[in-house]
Picture 1 (cartoon, rainbow, N blue to C red):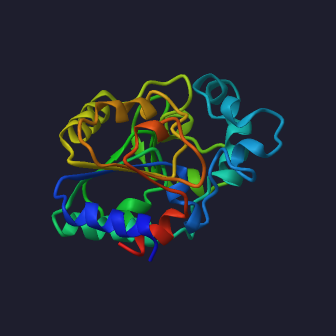
Picture 2: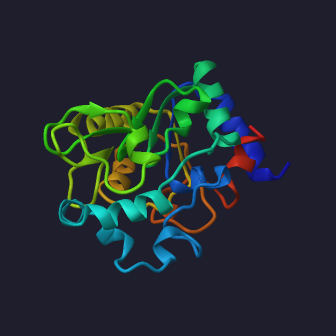
Length: 238
């Protein structure tokens, strides 16, 4: 066991109000691609950039093209929690972890058993009608071909935060509360490049800020411990 892992274990052992803040890199070991790595979604060729396809205005004007991308690249069918998801759920059950704050939309934290999960960007496991607002089964959206429609004729959309849309106020307030009161904040699998979500870590007031990411992040200078490794492999050792 290397020195950084040992230090992380000691920090976890001495904490009982841990908050985890995670991004796409948490789920890559479950077979779900991230966005900004060499082979991530943002480095693949489509008629439009992914940032455009995943925007509110594009969805409204081009639901057919959005759903072509959705069915091709946002499918989470068969994905299972990895060691990071599982260990985080265990830490919560042990009374050490207070909340998981995630930028991911795959629901894998809940699948692993985590109870207090704040989904900043929503979830692909929920869907609703863009016209009447009625909640509908996400299955019609995730496994069907073409554009799914409600009984009212409106286009079904995933309950995710698209570009040009604001984060949910209650979710953000909850995230700020947990981060502000945490005695340890672990950030994993995120480049901290997406705002306003990335800015939430500025509310942390403690002295146990841990960054687990394969590449540099904008918060490296603030960190008390940095581990450059796969997050699942790290959590399997704590």
